[in-house]
Length: 69
Image (cartoon, rainbow, N blue to C red; front, side, top):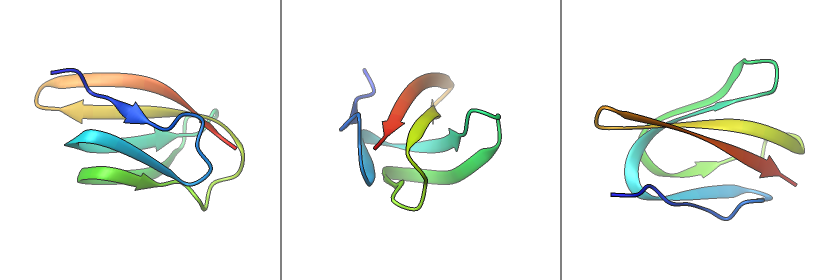
């Protein structure tokens, strides 16, 4: 039941292999994207940098670093 995200780094979209709830935080800790029950995330409107992707699936929370080019 591993959650896979790709591609990383990305220039626009991040894809997930399951429908999950996703939140993207900037380095200041502010939520910049919040999507529920999705398997794709449009990051094209964000500036280049490192973001924290929080994935919630069932009762599991996973944190991943995403590099936006």
